[in-house]
Length: 228
Image 1 (cartoon, rainbow, N blue to C red):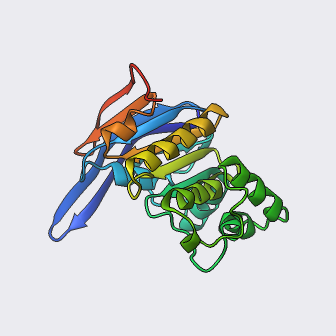
Image 2 (cartoon, one colour):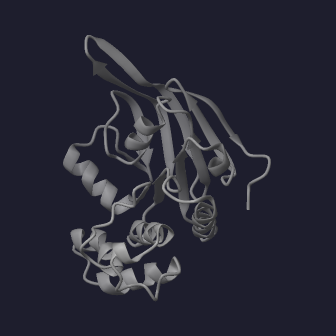
Image 3 (cartoon, rainbow, N blue to C red):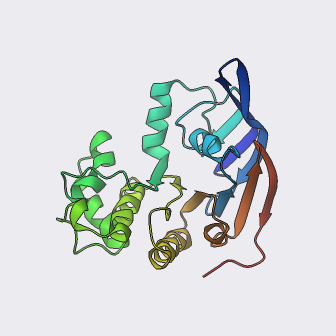
């Protein structure tokens, strides 16, 4: 089991009131699964993503990531877990504009003090089909190519999970489908992939969907058929 979530809750203060973003959420993800977390705006899926990505801590409940209970870790300890175990892919790519694709992919390894950063970054870019674009800056790449660079950066540390937040949101339909196919290939290689989205067509690419609404999971069932 790569993820075990037990009764996670998270609230936020809003003026004089309290917003319950997550209300005693529980589920599990097996190693090697490809899962979509889907829900409308305000459903709690972004809060859940922040907790799963160790970007925040729950008010209550338990979160075990790759056999490590991360529920009550300090901010510095969470940062270490993120660097070791989670590869992030964002809607806006989050690439540094003044450095090359290769240098963007190297960054997580450099932060971790890995000496073999250059070789591993080359390997990651080859996996995503950009071996010939290593010296190009983000402004020289298409949207789909930028997202491939972001995916290469996510996998370069060989994390326990790839966590993608609306990864096709800034892409046209054809390019978005290509990116989802790439996630499928990475999953076929044994990587655990979690896609956070509001788009049911994107979620349909995943064999399993976790539907969240009003801070509560209302469905966590396998799809009858995955989109190719």
